[in-house]
Length: 111
Image (cartoon, rainbow, N blue to C red):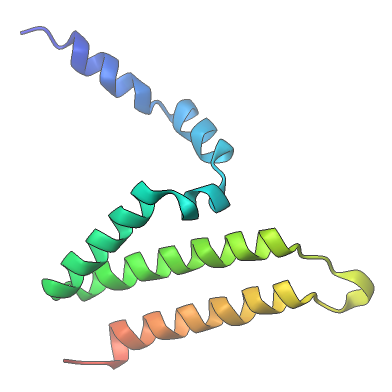
C-alpha cells in the first residue's frame, strides 16, 4: 500500500499552516459565509432533535460569540475619556447573557 497521498493530505494540517489560516480568517466574512451558516444550522437542528444538549449549547455559544465579536469589531471599541463605548457595553452584556444562557441550559434546566 502506498500512503503517500494520505501523508500529503495530512501535511496540509501542519501547525504553522493552521495557525496562519486562523490568523488570516475574518470573523465578519465567516458569519456571512453560506457554508458556515448552513453547517451551524444543520448541526444545531440535529443536536436539538437528538437531544444532545451539550453539543447544542456549544454550537449556540460559539456562534453567538463569533457574531458578538464581529459586531463589536465592526462598531469599533475605543476607551476615550475612560468611558466605554456603546459597542464595548454590548460586548460585555452580550457575553454575560450568552454565558448565563449556557449555564442555565447545561446545569440548571432539567428535562
